[in-house]
Image 1 (tube, helix red, strand yellow):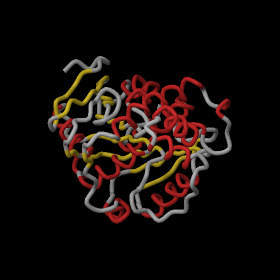
Image 2: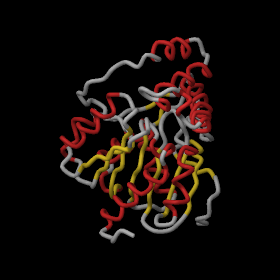
Image 3: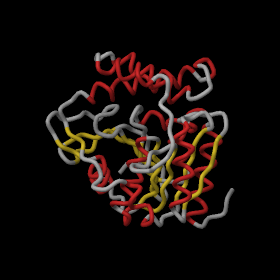
Length: 277
């Protein structure tokens, strides 16, 4: 397979998943947030491909991967099928937000396929942590119920891209625009009659079985729940550690790509037992 960057499609489980592959080395899979698509990894893709066979893709219902009406599906099953399609026997996983939740669920369901887990502000289903409802939440719900997806996406951007204690002007407009546009696609697809299968048991119940090297990365302007999830993961997974990237909210990889990339690559070097540059 040509490892140069080019978007193509894999037919898996009756769906067409858009994906890109670049580089060589131990495989690394990038799983986007559920308010984004694979474009969020633009500042990581080429950098990681210098050391890894790097795979990014649009999950079903996001970006260029269409949602099939009336079809029951699983993001975990789709990823298993995509890895098989690409001939990947085992990989590092890096997931952001909802993508981090999926990476965690995948690691618990398919441990033989996972070499390490990196969660960027990822959720942990069933975790008992304190949270505060963002002030934008009610406006988001009202806009979504009214099928005003642009307005709902703007509320998502304020909650997650701007984060806590920062005005919109403090964030690169290009980041806000990319997430808003990607989120509109995702929100529209949420109205489909497709049915997403979820994990059989909450991830929090299986954390003791997670033995792969695990890293949680988060920003200090993210929602309160995220910092609490970082603590929760470290407390419940013996192989886990956390890294805070100051001056960022829910997408440290987009706001501070150089810092984020170094954290990830250093972690992967340690996992693979290679000296740091």
